[in-house]
Amino acid sequence: SKTLTQSPIAPAKPAKPHLPDSQTVTSVQHWTDRLFSFRVTRPQSLRFRSGEFVMIGLMGDNGKPLLRAYSIASPNWDEELEFYSIKVPDGPLTSKLQHINVGDEIILRPKPVGTLVHDALLPGKRVWFLATGTGIAPFASLMRDPETYEKYDQVIMMHTCRTADELEYGRKLVEDLQNDELIGEMVEGKLLYYPTTTREETARMGRITDNLSTGKVFEDLGIPPMNQSEDRAMVCGSLDFNIDVKAVLESFGLREGANSEPREYVVEKAFVGDGI
Ligand code: FAD
Ligand code: A2P
Image (cartoon, rainbow, N blue to C red):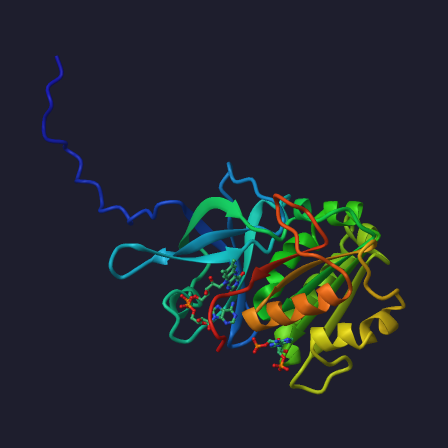
């Protein structure tokens, strides 16, 4: 009979500590000294609705997970998950997260939630995606989801940043979408991209709130002013932006909805805090 003896093999190498809910980084791209995007493996069991967010992070120095909310920027059909992130110089998470490399592990809690989902809006003719800064992340998912184009005749992506380099992630994403063999045809003539800067001279300028309330964007795009029967909106930006843009949407007769009570617009914070 076999007896347990000391194994002749050397004791197992101390395994690299395996993070709970860990996923592996597959690519990283830096856009500016404040912005980067990255892709990770997707847990096989993870289902989400385009526009939702999850908690992701790294193991903290105290051995506890350091997690933050992140919108999933990839569409729900993608085999990987993409995120678009700020780099806060002394931010507990992003001061470390900005240094991740391909092959590194991050923690991802597979419980997607959020209000920026199609189910939270009543059917309409046009959908407006209104974002400042990293607030474009949930729309990076929704713009790449065929359901968006099945539900609406027109999809208008308004994205505003201080400078042109901060718009680059969104600009490239829209360009790739238009040139995509499969989705390109579906978005053609339907996806209207309206990027603006506020602190650098570019072809299109101004705050989203101003371009809506003056009617400039309707004129530029040749579409009727926003109205309750045809237009739907999803908003994602800083707290101040969200408050101000809500007032503009309400002035056009749109009402805030939720998953449990679909109406004409929904809002989510792109981050909590006063900005940097
Ligand atoms: P924190 O201590 O979390 O933040 C420090 C300060 O930095 C904040 O007080 C704020 O002033 C500023 N700040 C934080 N995040 C941002 C930001 N995104 N843009 C501008 N200023 C910011 N962040 C992303 O980069 N991408 C996302 O897709 C994203 N999705 C989010 C979804 C939700 C629902 C919420 C609530 C937040 C989301 N955030 C996102 C913010 C994110 O959760 C963290 O705050 C961010 O990663 C910074 O983490 P930190 O620990 O380094 O600093
Ligand atoms: P502005 O440059 O006029 O402040 P930030 O970098 O501060 O997070 O801002 C991102 C973008 O959102 C900037 O272009 C900024 O314009 C704009 N913005 C900030 N606050 C508001 C607001 N309350 N209403 C509309 N746009 C805003």
